Length: 119
Image (cartoon, rainbow, N blue to C red; front, side):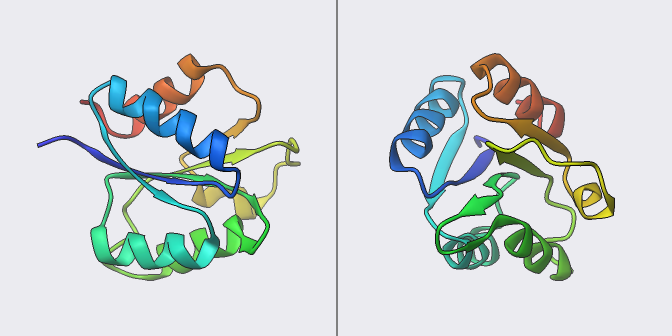
């Protein structure tokens, strides 16, 4: 069975290109366009890893990640943060398996995913 990756980004083209990249690499990918949708899909589908944009139009990716990690059945899912604004390191970023700054090379996305859930 393929590893399932939840891709959360409010930018449709970014989300679609990331999904295509993951599918081409042999992963299954599902999409969410908002923080609320991300939490709902994570709870319903328990993906193997989540790629989460931190700055969503309809909510915070950081808050969605906190909500997901607060659920015992989802707490072990690695979440990889994607952000256009390089964050300053602080304790809140410790809940992420990795933090990638957009635009990031596809090899960097794949490396982070593969480190979290090898095929």
